Amino acid sequence: MSSVTDEVPRPSEKLGFGLFASSTSRSLIGGLSAAAAWSFVAALTAFWPDKPDNDWTYTGDFAIACGALAVALALAAFAGVRFAAFQRLQRLTPWLFALALFLAAWEAVTAKLGLLPLPFFPPPQAIVEVAIDDWGRLAEGIVASARLLATGYFLGAAVGFVTGVAIGWSRLAGYWIHPVLRFIGPLPATAWLPLAFFVFPSSFSASIFLIALATGFPVTVLTWSGVAGVNSAYYDIARTLGATQRFLVLKVAIPAAMPHVFVGLFMGLGNSFAVLVVAEMLGVKAGLGWYLQWAQGWAAYANMYAALLLMAVLCSGLITLLFRLRDRLLSWQKGLVRW
Amino acid sequence: MVAAIAGDYPVRGSTLTLREVSHRFDLEGQPLPVLDRISLQIGRGEFVALLGPSGCGKSTLLRLVAGLDTPTAGSLLTEGREIEAPDPSRVVVFQDPTLYPWRTVWSNVALGLEARGLLRTHRGRIEDALRLVGLTSFANAYPHQLSGGMAQRAALARALVNDPKLLILDEPLGQLDSLTRITMQGELVSLWQRAGFTALLVTHDVEEALFLAGRVIVLSQRPAHIKAEIANARPYPRHRGDPHLVELRHQVLAHLGLDATW
Image (cartoon, rainbow over all chains, first blue to last red; front, side, top):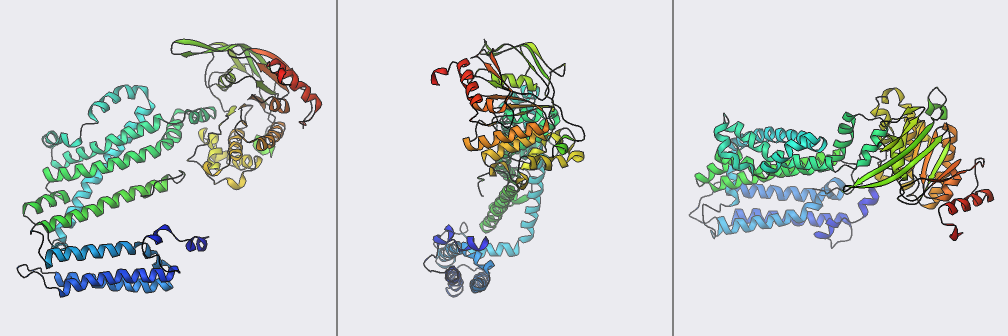
């Protein structure tokens, strides 16, 4: 089965280097082109002197790193001739190639030509410098942000889920909770910020409340709509087979609503990122959001870019994780959107 | 196999009595009468078909028998006791198989046992029911992987695993292609003969009613009342070309006001 699918050209192969007949030679050429592009970045960084009035400490290190990546890519390309596992990298080669070109251009217009104003646009080696010199503070930021986000998100998701099921299931719960939800839900969680910071004992607990609020609203609404939208025939079936109320909620309503619940969890996660950063910038003196603010205050723009990059990686990673979880739990669904 | 489904005791279907059952819906404040004083007596192990034009209230009647709704007037009794709520001894097979898409075929069939907390002790029944409908090799498939006929067979297994005394069939073969329908009709008869439950079938297919049932009740347009009762004593297995069935078919169509098409 796998040997059959392997021979079918994947659409991705048409994107980059699809000129050559066999997939092995194609992956070899592709890998080598990417390696060449990265060697070009290394050479450009190393041999073209930086603009004299700037003294970038890590220019050499950056060149070495790019060179090392080029060597690794070349080795992987040759290994791909033998090992199918390395051929998978082929999918990435167009991107690796483009990334190298982007870095070369960035390097040229900043460190080499000085076309972009400093300190707002530092060269790539300045970001490498931040990663090497300030990794301790960045790591502390990650831990602080993760702690805040995880606590707020899980709290909000759990409360939102239970509330959503309650509104969807019980008329009484719907009567009392629905108007509150309609009135307060659309209010951006950040609007509560000034109030939360003096009502709660600490800025940490206030931020947890805000993140939970931002997460809880979409999770509640979508869980509710999921439960309310369950095919009533599902209940009829279970009732004629002797199901109790408890069984109807836990084994019929909730599993049937899960696809909606995951949409809510996904939207809630996006909201929680926004509130996290704002809360960290305005109240909590820790975390990546605070680091961004702090770096900007010191005009340390390289630090800011480094933190932004890190944030992008982490947020995207969390979303990916959520989608993986959904794919695993909802494998029975047809036509899932791949993240 | 029947013994395995039935457990240790021989299955006998239950009786069903309808006394002057009337029902109406409330449609935007306007009462809409659906059933008009229907009285009916069904004996143990009988196979009765309700035949009537589309929208005449047949499915409503079945929901009352299942205990999913309560009638506006009149009463329904099984084994002399009033039907007040759904009970696993009366299982419905709907026109749409309505398998739970998040459960495999096996877990769908297990539903009734799980709901009643019998899964641990009666696990073996699931295998038996799957074998009975010929789905053993699809136990781990999800509903979206099944054809229409297979899905309806799984729905049948989900009903049979509960050892029903009254099987309520709401146009269970209505959505199948005609070839699958003919096969499933034969299977339904042999299942009924082996398990011995009482069967109440709603259909608007005259040939199907006559092929399966020992008694055909013809209902009128809404509000439905009983127009005619036709006994069909032909022995099983029946043959579609049987001249006696063809004659009965003519009679039934006449009651439905469709004999001009003969």
